[in-house]
Length: 343
Image (cartoon, rainbow, N blue to C red; front, side, top):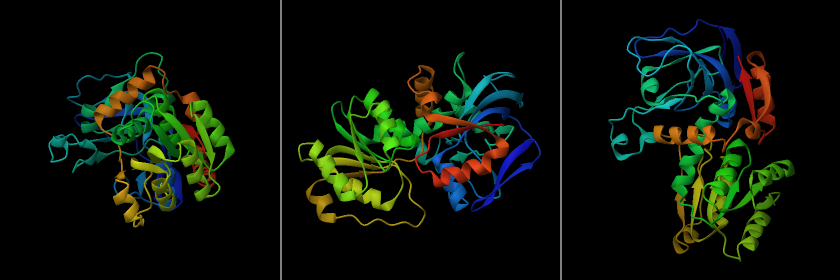
């Protein structure tokens, strides 16, 4: 089969490799759509991901497709079914799984290889985190469930209440999902902060109430304060993964506010925060990572009901053979929406 293989920093090859062999409990899926992801772009730029992928390795993790082979003992799935498979599954028995923190599982099983004609879905993911698609749900729509589940985790952890002033910093696909759900599901007043006017225009279409063009951090903080009676936001979500934006977000909060450092910074990064501000303003700093099977089900339900659709988040379709060019383009166009790779 044709597949993308990551060898290291910005080193990606489209090669002919063996179709994966499946064992008991596994299924083989023909990939119908694999979506690009900000995490994949970071992995491509850095050449690895400490937890998810170590090169050389098959690449890509947001997918939907058709079951073409079923291993011995598989229950609940059969040939020909249209499915969406998550990129991980927790063990269900470790310290963290027993405390409803399955995203922090001590043996969290990751699966990569969506940028290929076929992908093996291992037994644990088949049992715990793969789902049959309802009629009418497109492959590209279904593949959005994985990043959407991560966004839902971030929103749940941030404690948003109806009417809260919520600042979203970063308006790529993930930031746009935060805008859409904070407005539609949580009934928040959403303030979108971005670096380019087209991003802000898109955020407005997603439901953002206020828009801030962030050319200078201090000006952006002043703008947030002006929009919130001088107090600052109830919740700030940083959806980029830059240390300077983590710091900026803290200064946008009201006293007693919550910031979610959702965007993952590069390994080894450290951030300095004003301890007096944190202490005397009683600020809460959170960070949200990944998703859980329960959130995957919730996200797929949102997709099935049409709350999130590919037409809002996917603005290009390319063959697998063009993946290298797509990744290079996304590296130089921060905030670009998703591209659907069709093997």
